[in-house]
Length: 490
Image 1 (cartoon, one colour):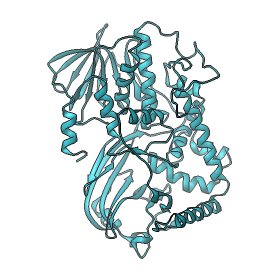
Image 2 (image 1 turned 120 degrees about the vertical axis):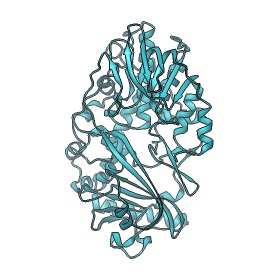
Image 3 (image 1 turned 135 degrees about the vertical axis):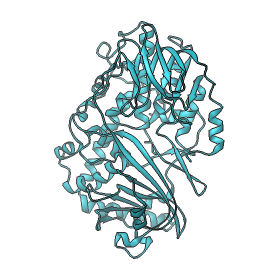
Image 4 (image 1 turned 180 degrees about the horizontal axis):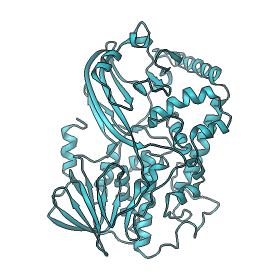
């Protein structure tokens, strides 16, 4: 069960019963961070440009949030999907503050969080663990761990930080003011403008080798990070890899009670007619408007249609037929276990010897990508989260765990299967008003990139509806040298 009954009832109150035929200026397919952000920015920007009369939003699931969801184990709520946000994810930060949501940052104990790199037979590297609450002890433990990592991986650790910072600084261009920031009609143009496109043309491994990274660092630590964050090896594209590395840094945060609340809050504020558990099966261009037909037998018409969910595993029939590059989703199996790990599986004598985060190298023999402790209820009772590329059988779990009180499994079509060079679907799926937010996911898939792409799509829609396109589009208007950022925290 992803959410408490109270949450489901509160979301149900957002819905409006649909009739057999309805019309709206904008129809949005998908209620995750991309769809909810499109609705928000359309309302925000249309105050000064074209007016949006109505927004209909459709989702095949019973709750909003898309790939942001939670599970409840032993009375505790844990993220089951998109779980972490970077301190410079400014759209997410603004949403959280605007909606009066509570930020959950790292706990003081995270400084002494232990990491082990497992190759299936032994731990190649382990940090020193400390359960002491003393800040002095934790400081020296953290210092000792930094020294141990530096001795193993060398100066490349510093290069990794620099590589990530350069990429993040380039991404910050997307927060410039609308007056100095173009509207982008393609993903390629959006990436080239920020200086990020070249990172999508070759792999992370090639990029790091070119930067003279230590082979040991690439094969072990960086591989652990990409396997945790994207379920893939260092053969992913360079940009996706840089985003993955950024997601392993410090000061990461989440929304207390679940990140899905950002989507729910944006939907609630945007005067959206929400249709939950209603899947769109066809979208037909009838000239001046689109007709959307749902699995419930309902028909809706709208001038603008926005697809805000990955099309890769959906069976929406488009008329005329649309053409996008073939793309596979990387499935990540999230397995939650309340119980106790079996130290013998790892060749150890006690549970306390097992690191709190067990990452793995790239090997076909390894059945999981990582195991982490989410909550220590007692010395004999903990909640763990595991990621794997295939579903984990009960027989295997009984080998890994000595005690299993509760087990929950979720199969996420979580993000694209990255490769290089990347090919991108268009933002505009036809010559009229059919848009695709998730085309940007082939660059990198995060909650923030979904919001950034959605903001651009909202501006693209409004500019084309108002007849101002393409005067304010990329290639015909350049950025000013002194960037005026929208966010005072910058």
